Figure 1: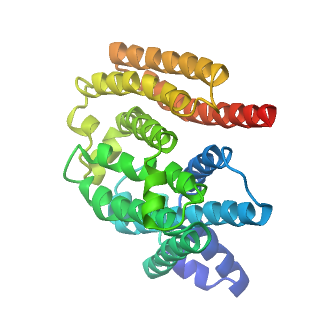
Figure 2: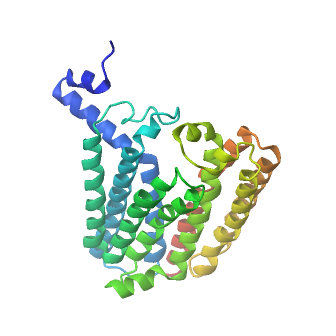
Figure 3: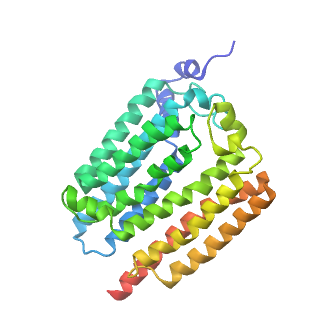
Amino acid sequence: MSRSPLVSLAAQPRADRLAHQAAALLETTKPRITRLVTITAAVGFAMAALGRSWALPELLIAVVGCIVGTAMSAAGANALNQLMERHRDARMPRTVGRPLPQDRVEPIAVLITGSSLCVLGVLALWLTCGPVPAAISAICVLTYLAIYTPMKVVSIWSTLVGAIPGALPPLIGWTAASQATGWAAGWAAALEPGGISLFLLMTVWQLPHFLAIAWLYREDYAAGGYRMLPVIDPWGVATAPAIVLTALALLPLTLLPAYAMPDLLGFAYLSVAWATGLAYLALAVRLAITRTRRDARTVFIASILHLPLLLIVMVAEAVVRVLILN
C-alpha cells in the first residue's frame, strides 16, 4: 500500500520535512497571482507618487509597506481560498496537483499561515501607509473569501464579483502614495480620477481573461461543481459574445488613464493602448466566430501580455515626463 505524502515526509530528516512543508505552503499562496496583485498595487503607488514631492525616508517606508503589505495579504487570501476549495480542487485535473489535494501540507497549517498573512499584511499597510490602504486591502480579502469564493458554485455572476478584489490593489497603492492623513482624506484620495481609472481598467480586463480561462477548462470547472458561464454554455453561444463585449468595453478603459492623468500620460501610452486594445478585440472577435479552444487559448495568452505591456508603458512614460518637467 502506498503511503500518503505526509506520511512519507514524516520519515525524512527534519530539515527536509520543513523545506517541503515551506515549499507546499508557498505554493498555496499562488505566487504568480500574488505577484500580479503586488505589481498592480505598485503601479498605483507609482502613478500617485510621481505627482508629489517626497522625503526619501518617507518614500521608502511607504513603498516597502505598500509592496510587503499587499503581497502578504494577497498571499494569505490565496492560501485560504485553496483551503476552502481543497475538496473541489481534488476533483479537477487542473488543480488536483495542488498541495492540499495531494496531502503535502496539513489544512491547519494553511489556515494558520493564510490567516496570519492576511492580518499581518493589513497591519503592515496600516502602520506604514495609513488606515485607508489597509481598509482597501481588508475589503479585497473579505470580498474574495466571503463573497466570491462561495459564490462560484451558485452563480455565473461570480466572475463579475471576483473582478472587484482583483481590481482594488491599484487603489491600495494609489492611496498609500496619496500622503493623505485620516479616513476622510484617504477615501477622497481613493476617488481621485487617476486611481478610479486604474480600478476600472483592472475590473474590465479581468472579465475576458477569466471567461477565456473558464472556456478552456470548462470540463474541469464542471467536475468541481463550479457554476461558470462556459460550464452552462459549453458551445460558447453566450460566452463568445460576452468575451467580445468585455474586450470592446476594455478598449476605452485602457485609454481612460491618459485622460485622467494628462500630466503623466500622453502619446506613447495612448498609442500602445489603441494598438493593443484593437488587436485584443480582433482576437476576441475571431474567437466568437470560430469558438475553438485554440482561439480561446490565444485570447487568454493575449490578455496576460496585454496588461503588463500597458502597465510598463504607463509607468515608463510617466517617469520620463516627470524627469523632463523637473
